[in-house]
Length: 244
Image 1 (cartoon, helix red, strand yellow):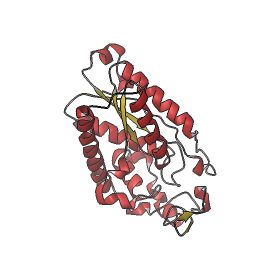
Image 2 (cartoon, one colour):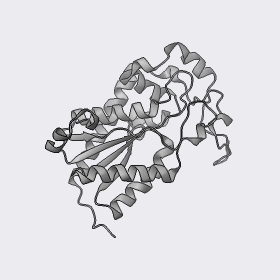
Image 3 (spheres, helix red, strand yellow):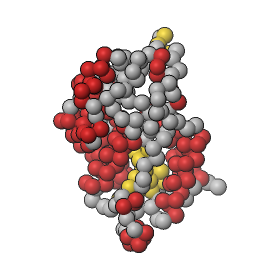
């Protein structure tokens, strides 16, 4: 059940006990992919998992702005602080829980959100009347996880499968030629770069020409399947008593 498409009476009648909250970002993804890539991909994975899951699932509206200041030099990028994102996610999870959907998986599409989502979901479990866990789709695609860059083959492939109209196919060569092979500027194990424009000319990391609709379909199958397995575990989980 996609919450924004339902009436309140239909929402009230739902038998769902779990909810999915997509969280993305509005940030540059090279010359070929939209600023909303992370949000679109998080929504695609959440919706695919909800469609295939045996029990009813609520899909909340996506949070479209995340922790993305590292892309601030590229036009159109929006960002918020970690504390603001944590508070926003906590408030939305609390809203869902107030209607009985008190087990929530936060479906993340942006690497910059990972640390904040890990912290806030732990805080929710410890102190709120809800149980929440984070899920980052590109960490759940098997051997393909190691190919993750930024606006590279994985993100572009998922777009080409789930939202093909958003990809500028005629700009893939440009994207690859102005991109970087690796995230960051490293000395040993230390990344010297703060912002992405320090190591990539056009914001791309990886070669989006290695993407395809077929790869995107595989990525969606893997990530949605892993998310369904997580939903099973979340439904079966008996959380520890919450503190004050």
